[in-house]
Amino acid sequence: MSMKVEDSELTESDRSAKVKKEVKLPLFSFESVAAATNNFSDENKLGEGGFGPVYKGTLFNGDEVAVKRLSRRSGQGWEELRNEALLIAKLQHNNLVRLLGCCIDRNEKMLIYEFMPNKSLDLFLFDATKKQMLDWGTRVRIIDGIAQGILYLHQYSRFRIIHRDLKASNILLDSHMNPKISDFGLAKIFGDNELQANTNRIVGTYGYMAPEYALEGLFSVKSDVFSFGVLLLEIVSGKKNTGFYQTSSFNLLGYAWDLWTRNSGLDLMDSALDDSDNLSNNSLHTVPRYVNIGLLCVQESPEDRPTMSDVVSTIGNDTVSLPSPKPPAFLKVRGDYSSSLPSTSTERFSVNVMTYTILEAR
Image (cartoon, rainbow, N blue to C red; front, side):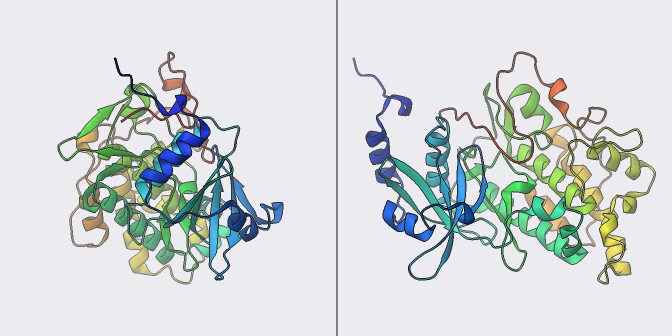
């Protein structure tokens, strides 16, 4: 009787050989990556996630790169890295971060990406000083770019892909502040006729997870739409959805809803934009429209949420009329809504920055 051998049962060398065979990417030697990152020096370190550290590097040809190095202590990170390499190697879009190659050498596993000089959106959006650099025109461009990237994943790539971990820290910014979606470690490929899937291994980040996923393990393209809606409202307001306390609202979604029902959607606008020279009367007119789009995306029922195709068409055309949204999910739940999750759940979640991954088999 034959038995399927799971990746967790393979030796390090066997797993490395398997990835080398599966991933059609340029392979970098350990020596070349070490040289590019100044031997992984602290000065070159850009940050750290659940998988391990990320370093800035400069290749011999002068190209700047970001190196994601899998920590040897990260048991789940191996599967996340493999999943990301297999997926993103097949994707090509201006609003998705580009994977240049990988290194599977000396028991090391690393992914090499194009370097994003402005790092991630959260570092600007939630910083009192840096958010001044995000004028309204830049925020609109970031929202549109994120929407275009998600639409490509859902509809126009070779596969239908659900990202499952869209959040501000996973939106990278290039030198012109154009957004690129990153971190595909939790992404799932759907078949042509597959509309949703179910898992009892819930992974993701507080504040961005759709209710049907957080509470029931159901995910679909509409789960990503929900995450995008949270992102949109955060970009407009400059506030995090989690840990949000203002008036009677427990989170940003509730606060946005309260303002919307009082016809005061403009009041959600980030106060950092008040002094912006680029905030024209037309911009003031469009802010409530973006709040409307965001609230449509975070409605409790997946069926009520628009598709990303709908979202892109409404963002790009102010003449398209918008329906009134229904109340958002988690309306009266505090910013950290872990208390609303099933008590039997054994998964760990991240808060905005680090993601803990448990990858289930496809």
